[in-house]
Amino acid sequence: MSTVPLVRVENLTKYFPIKAGIFQRKVGDVKAVDGVSFDIWRGETLGMVGESGCGKTTVGRTILRIYYPTSGEIYFDGTPLSTVKNKPLRQMRRRMQMVFQDPYASLNPRLTAGEIVGEPLEIHALARGAEKWKRVAELFEMVGLSREFINRYPHEFSGGQRQRIGLARALALTPELIICDEPIAALDVSIQAQIVNLIEELQEELKLTYLFIAHDLSMVKHISDRVLVMYVGKVMELADRDELYESPLHPYTKALLSAVPIPDPEYEMHRKRIILSGDLPSPAQPPPGCRFHTRCPIAEQKCMLSEPPLREVQPGHLVACHFV
Image (cartoon, rainbow, N blue to C red; front, side, top):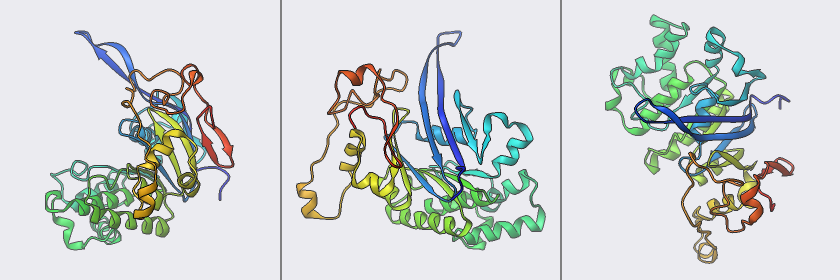
């Protein structure tokens, strides 16, 4: 394994301004991502989990520079992205792509499936004419679609087929990193496994690196090498997949994993479910100290006053909690 991670995120923050009044003056910030740090190693799948609104998608889009970070730094293969602009950024974007959550909204309904997949090749001047269509046909077969579908429009496909088109589009530029933003959330359960298996096969075949954002904890366990747990814009825990699922250390991670169903009726009968009280805090007004203290079953005065740093408590196992 390389000593330099493919992606290094250091103290990343992304705030969205809140504006009010006739003159749209800024009255506050939505702190979507607030001081997040982690690495993604070449060839691995880093799973990212957390409740809706915790900042997972914002992290993914900021890594790709769809959003510009408020502060912090993102390194791609050792290069700080804040220093890359215009043509060099355009060239670097070929190396990182995204598969979006909603296959119904992420495809242009006015273009055929072949035009959608071939568009990146034209934008980056990699192929035109017959050469482009040859590459499009190869990409269709790579994701398990027939070449006969090239001239069909998105509304003629099922949800799973649309997500395969989105995956083919992401692969068109032969990227090294693909950010999968809940790629199976909008699909039927029967189709989810097919898409995840395809994602794994493509990783092995093309030596891809993934940031896999998801809600489904059992699916994240299946596909990820390491798992990162987020809560209201902060990293709560980061560890190897097996270690995190077998011995979670943060109270929030324990609560999340207690909700994952296990196909063993006897074990399920005696397993204790951790029910969190209260609602998810607003990222516009996050609580002081530890973000999780308003719902934490073991919170004390210290948690309300000081924010716990993300520290390594075991080799490769990082936790942000005063009592671990």
